[in-house]
Image (cartoon, rainbow, N blue to C red; front, side, top):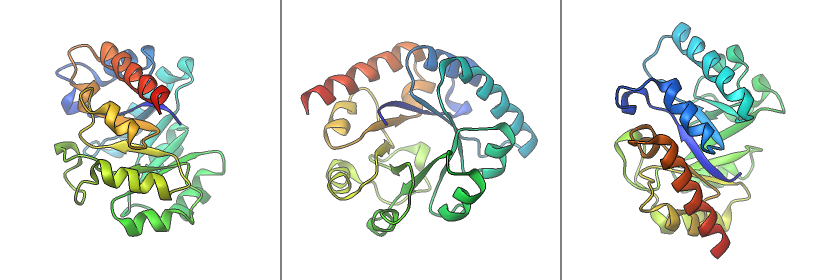
Length: 209
């Protein structure tokens, strides 16, 4: 895994449609899109997920659904992202199948250790920095925490939480394989330019490692 991992938030899209922001992002090189909806009804979430999946197909960008296995199955998503309080990984894998991408958030060192025994496709280090978009999580890992996880874990790391163009380089240097961003793209004046800039930073930081 490598690149920009967009996590959607319709409330941060600055009066633009979520589909428009996603389209601009994938046209500019976003590698993964996670559709996160905490307040939509199941009906509306499925309808939106189907629309996003259709939009992503020509770009070969995987659609990952946050939390909701039922929505992921209903729309034919490429994977799901689950937290520590969501459906257990083993159950999610049985329902989603061997080919599905499954990511798991880790919020404590015990979570990191437990993930070693799971065949998840990546772990989400959450949050790296304090952020209002991840208000229900525990204390931020910081760069030292990210480095510690990198030196221990066998899984690719997707870093999320307070990541933007100003700190992206240090997060990659600390061990992140992918940068998950929310407001850095959804709220950007130009989402396309924001993705291009983040990809440039990621690639530059990787070359220096």
